[in-house]
Length: 360
Image (cartoon, rainbow, N blue to C red; front, side, top):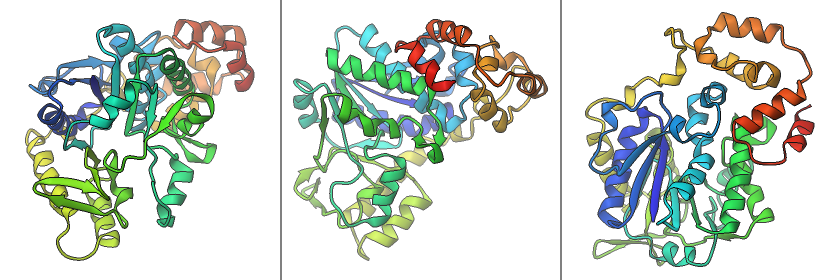
């Protein structure tokens, strides 16, 4: 089994914490980090990381052209589909592949998941397993029914079909743009059970998270934790800090509670792994090669103009002023043949003309 996470360097402390928990509880798992940075800094060295792979090194096509259009929050999610492809191609001895967000923490072996992946190609966890939390029900309709802090596939034709579909959609549309019905890599997966053979995994001990706290039924018995009888496998500490602390105040009963104990313990590990201040590391793709900061508004305009985007070999070699100049002179219609050829070179594997017809 391969377990991987996808980060920029400012989340290295979270990845260290996750990897340590994986190695402690699933010692036979290989732990990989997909790192979206120009280079791999010394701060990414860890005894718990089996490999750190730069996104640009596993990418098919022009990575700089692709990543320029993403802000940092979008970037580490936008490469996940391609990284699944990479693992399936480059690790032929592995047949189970699991993604976990860096702010997850593993408490016990993935016994049920291992068995599921023997026969089921794709495994997803819903955000919610019971009605009643109206705030989170509304959030799920906006951000996605399934939480993409976890995703597991096996080595099968069906899983590859799914990964290729998802990776192609992320190539084109992996943005934090809820008004358009897109929320990074996650909202797309609402469609996955319609198109593919998906296991909707309703074990309460997987992907237990902030949104699970209301009436959660978390208990501790002789040092082991259970969620309404299901053994706890991992917690997703999404919204670590103020968000989780508010949810604990709002949704947990007053006084001692197992989640408060687990949160306190996780906080200690999390902070210990940030003593070098790695969380303050600037993102290397936030600047041009000259050192000039990239204006986020330009990223949005750039990704909306395919003719300009695919006419630039390396946008990081330019400047804000040069990008603005190109965008101001860009034509309103795409040069379809040029965009099709660029999609082919850059690794999009779906039906190109259908994509172009949608974009026109």
